[in-house]
Image 1 (tube, rainbow, N blue to C red):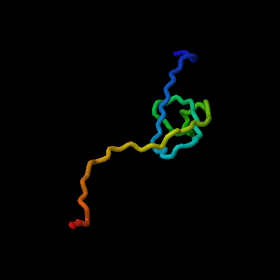
Image 2 (image 1 turned 30 degrees about the vertical axis):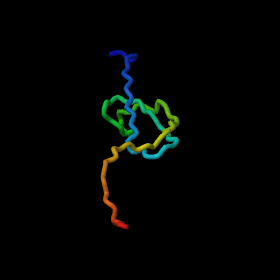
Image 3 (image 1 turned 90 degrees about the vertical axis):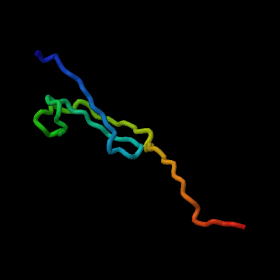
Image 4 (image 1 turned 180 degrees about the vertical axis):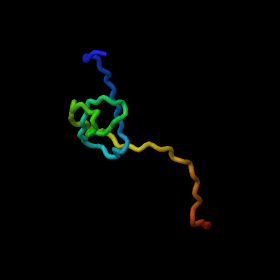
Length: 76
C-alpha cells in the first residue's frame, strides 16, 4: 500500500443530543477503525473542526389509545 491510498469513513450520530442548537465538532484522522479517543497513539491529527446546527429536537413516539373513565358520573 502506498502513502497516497486512504480510506475515508465517517460515522455521525446525534445520540445524546436532546436539544436543538449549535454544536461544535472536531474530526481527527487516525489509523484505527475502532478508536474514538483523540489522545490515542493511532490518531494522526486534527483534520477539521467547525459547528453544526441541530434544527429540531422532536421526540417521536407512539401515542397509545387509552380510554379513561370519568371520576365523576353526573346523572340529572
